[in-house]
Image (cartoon, rainbow, N blue to C red; front, side, top):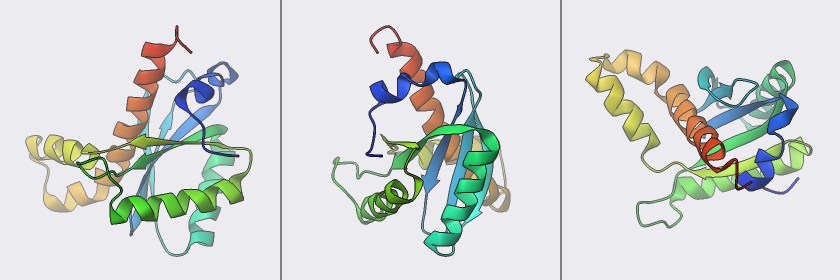
Length: 159
């Protein structure tokens, strides 16, 4: 299935199926999940990246066990709005997902500063560096997914 727009994704809201948010990095993929009403995003898990086939298997297990209809994938654009090296890596990962997942909607979401915002919140909470490193990717995925959920809620009358 080709990448979808938020408008296309919003059409599936009535299905009571969930969304997953992904913060894709070189070493990990932070995963968050929505409730069935698409109101709240919550941290779910962290996939330690090895090779694509292993990452895909873990992701497919999450999709099937949680009744997921779509993935919101953070796209780490540079501050100028151009693709960075990490953006190119995420686009490659998404291209592979498109082929492998077929019937799951995939939406990209500009996630500039999501990790920074989450890290700042954790620093304000006086969380140690070690504890921050264990949760920052899941929380960044949650931040990304909640942004999409909020956008769909605000635009519901337009979609």
